[in-house]
Figure 1: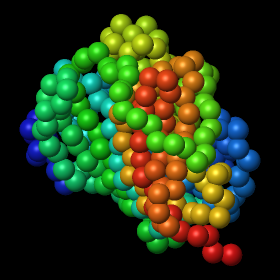
Figure 2: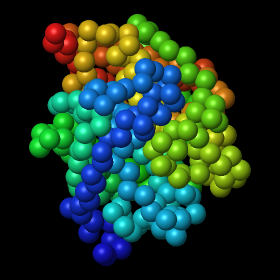
Figure 3: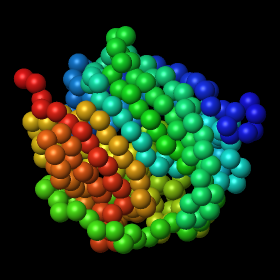
Figure 4: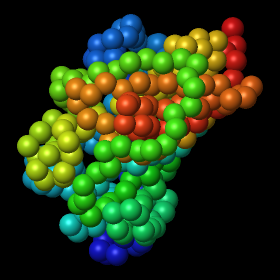
Length: 278
């Protein structure tokens, strides 16, 4: 492949997963939720635990990520992180039944940010089970030059209609890294996170925060089911500093979601929903 990032647009990858109930059970233990059985619906965003394509240590970079240049484009000297995304929930995936993810690099764009030049890569994922499209997703990945991350954000937090407190521990982050096969060292290697990437401590995974935001929504509104979700990270959250996952319903079909602490909002999202059918 060319080293020019834009030449990677259209590149594809596929992965088949059995949606093993044992792994789903580990996610349940991680999140302190009921254990699912074969045939149960997979909870929203738990699909991120599955469809991982492992590589040997020789296939990883110094940051612990899968080395770029395979499916994702190269961007020399930059760090890589998951910035946000959008997902449409068409039909729940079912635990213990094979499913397939097909991924396509949809766009590659240069932008200027607070810390300098950024490279945004949008990947489209389609998840099918039994021949039916269940989830349609876009993930935004950002490459950026190493820089001190934002520690706070002076932005008002809306009034919450529901709220759950989360105190992230090294154990929580280690377990989420383990079940998602995520090797990025900022989540479990404190000296690396602080000295190499400039964080205040171990960093809470963006996908974990999104999962907790949606989980808080579904538990506060048991008669509603997600239809679409958009979400993005605003600044990092670090270990042992409590935050809240909260939200408020803004219309008959939409709600705002966010994660925040005393330093301001850190993640935000909007969810579209419908009433559950009996």
